[in-house]
Image 1: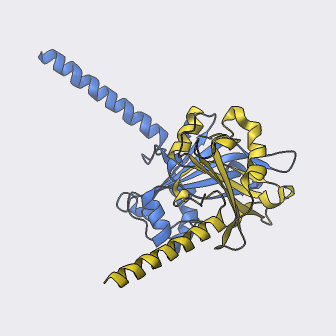
Image 2: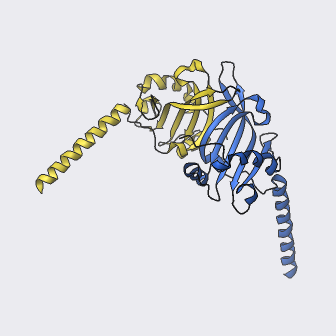
Length: 163
Length: 163
């Protein structure tokens, strides 16, 4: 019985270590794509031109309820999460533009103590090589915060909620 | 006391008649812009070219929870509501496209018995002459259903949920 317990515990530790390694591989900051963000409030959309390279296409921004409060009050509480969902924009023959495949997802998570060096926000980017696989792309401080830091007066946010 | 009661009742009747008249003026089908639809699930977006005239611009589609179930199962229960939110698309000098003012909102409401003549869906369109005022534009059977009827095999819906 004792042996079974030890084997079970060891298996659990191995599974936990494996899961942790996978999560770390996916995101150095430990930020993951939040479950259910597609049901969050749609803040606004823009279409960026091809010169934006990896970031060209439809930009849909989604906010969880704490982030939505932040957009409305200007004060983002810990737990606020903003998702920046980028899809290909496919020009049609008649001049319409349709959504294509997902290209990447950028995420901002507010945690004042954990991300105190970057204005209280943690940043992560996941690129999509196909419709399933995702991976964290960059260390966020250089790639995200240097630019968002220019928006310090607006809580480091570029977008505003379009009612 | 009796006089007070009669006056109160008469006032109530007047208020109810006024409300009814206003609602009817806004929407012959009694369909109104649903409260809180901006917090519903964002189904997908397209940008339509200027040749679409009144319907050109950003098309954002929102679904309440019953409509979202319908998109996923193919069966739309009574109470499902779909909002088609059309905003100006403003081309920028660098080729980006930004959202402009709201132009119109189209609404589909599922009620099998009430709208049995139009596939169980009631339709309404509200145009925005400015950011505040709205008005119902057309009788829906001719303007909406004739086209949606071509999608009978898909529950009269043109769009599909883009996860």
